[in-house]
Amino acid sequence: MFWYLPRFTDSALSAATLSASTAIAASVTIAHRMALMATPSGFDAAGQREALRMVSEKLAAATEGSFEAAIETGRFMMRSALGQVSPDDVAHGLMAIGVAAAEPAARTVKANARRLTRR
Image (cartoon, rainbow, N blue to C red):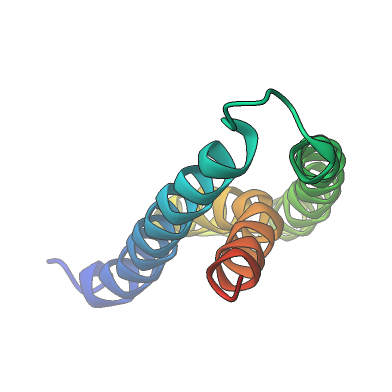
């Protein structure tokens, strides 16, 4: 009856793991950036550099995530158009699209957490 459940559980677990590790790295990054930008003397040069880097990285990750999601959507639609998608594959396809969209941001935030904790 639930022959597809282990396969879906694996993909859901990997998506949840990506989400949890990204959330932890994001909290570390936010804490370090707040300390850099909340100086008593105001927004110093290091805080300004970090703010500019933050905005440019967000734009780059969002753009890359959009492209990756579009590519994954195209793959899913082609498989669907060729009749290679079963009803349970829909959940896998949607999960793959979401993960493809989130991976660039996850990579960026994890790299930022590593970089900022070395200071």
